[in-house]
Length: 410
Ligand SMILES: *Cc1c(COP(=O)(O)O)cnc(C)c1O
Image (tube, rainbow, N blue to C red; front, side):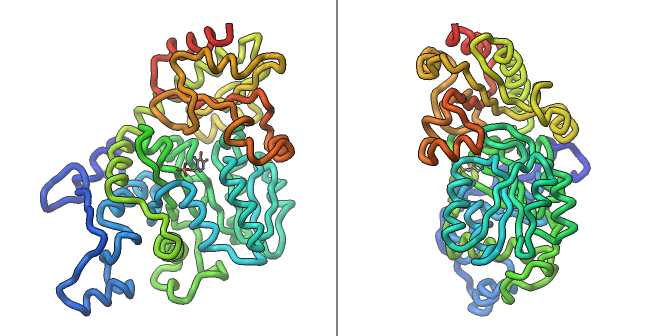
């Protein structure tokens, strides 16, 4: 199985693991607590000497099945699932970083993550926001107390493509934890381990779940990082192979202490959605490229930001990294005199909604919604003008989408 294709592995993953019933989906376990006939066994599970479940805040067999599925997709050595992508990111930062540490992050990132990093700064973590499309800028920001580098594969919403591989090599040379948020590309376009990532974060709410009916997040450990080189792993998590310590700490701190836990019901929904990740990505990436090309030619459009366009500054890099697919997100900047709200109100197919990676095409005036709270200055830093539309392209018929936007702009 391990040498077969992405979708073959994904759809056959579940039932290969249920020897008892041959069920094709993992059972949905509703129990909050798990009991043991022998108290020694109960203690052994609590002490991590034996595998098992204790209280559903730290996981159930259903969330474990989803974690195994994501681990297989990313070809990592383990995954922890969370209630949302933001819970996953919180767990990574707060479980691993301490006051006085230095974090280098791309300045082109999801607005809520940007906001989270500001909170982290208030806890005494030093933060440098750099243009991560240029690895030299990451290099220049290094300090003796730098512990971690954080980037998005394809940035939400500007679609900048970080210099993922060079930054990976840099992190390896300096023994830094390299965290890659792979939400916009998903493991289908490329696995985080190929960039040298230590940890890969995926919002399962987006492409992996795919249907706009479930929130979830995941942190996958690639196994490339040796946590013996990281100064903040608590002694109790320094057990067995040192390439596994970090994720154990993320699980203990992020799930047990912080409580951002995914429920079994939702884990099942995400696992079912994940089966068609490859099909949906092929379709929506094709739609996105066609729509990007059509909108780029439109006289009312100032510019289109999409890695699949030759005009995109990192088009060449994206082509090499993602093998001819460029994701589903477009940034479309309308000409200054165009009434953004009037255009949006004339759309008949695309839905006005936040979210991305859905089957449906969704559109949002970014500066007026998700980037409103951070203010004009920070928006300018991140390259989000007032006329910026974030379009998350879905799986509809291509001509319906092009016609919808063309009519709305007419
Ligand atoms: C949406 C998103 C998140 C957060 O995921 P949620 O599941 O919505 O909490 C994190 N990173 C990126 C790049 C995202 O687009």
